Length: 453
Image: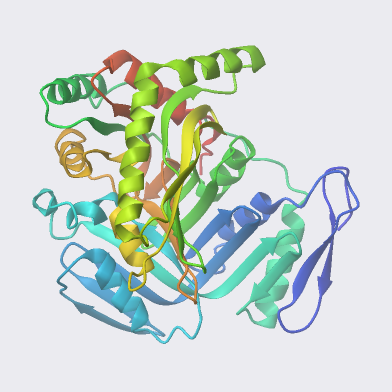
């Protein structure tokens, strides 16, 4: 492959754990989003989950095992054998036990958790049907990792490795796909009216805050990998993902973590609450930022989210280890900028990472405060099941470290159609017009970059 001004020459180290190394002699860098989109689009490696975290990209494909959970049934697959059974308890405990019962031998797991996963912990199961999907995790045969040292391929045959290398090489010289922008200005779900109802309930003392969302149906099938690649160029996410798993395709640019538990058992969450538009020019963006950091409504919304996150981490952390840092920093996420803080604690002895996830899920910035009453309002006022929206994409290491990133700025597709979704935080000072405009600001992180199949 020839080098260009904004690419790097790629060389391969042969042998076990073959490494694809980059000769970084140009001003640009290796195009990891293009490589990931090419692997996803080739349809050669079955179901997959692609996950980007700071400094690393992983494409995990061709599952040898899976754990699927809906409201009434647990399904476990391993090496061609499948079982199904009813379950009791809480979803996080059920999945934790199911993964522990598989012969993983240090393998990683990847997948997603739907918003409705929270219904057991928050006593909201009456809102669910028997077959409501809750989670789908898979254990891949093949993993392709890209980081500063290059690309590492594991689990693939020689011929598959050669094909992966060819796909990655060819992706470096490919042009960006053409978008089919989507109209997001219509309001067929009555979003403004639902915001008005929520404001009345808040002022009546039922809860302090709720995040209401609206779904935007797309009038055409979507090329999800191409949409991911194009959208990633225009977004600045905390994490990003691309997946095809169990009939669901999705791609998104996550603005924040729900929770991570690292190898040292440090629990982290990153609540973002308070929003203004971004990307409209330096002067306009600066004015929006100044307005954001001084708006009482946005400050209150953020402060109560941080307080809730602090309380949740403290409930699973060792005493006196929970702290807040970067309080009310401003972080830019694609077409919007948010007030942001970081909350950390050390997981208490005897607690599992899945317990931390259960305590912090769903993200307070995607549900409401108090969380139980906010979630009840979501189920009542959002009307349809959220599914992956405001749920999480999850990675679990062979050593037990866990990371769940919040799914908000995303495109979704099943055999029944494709859609976008966005929401806004409703408090007593909210107005229906402003909250609708906030959903438009967030949808502009994705809608202009959707690629028609």
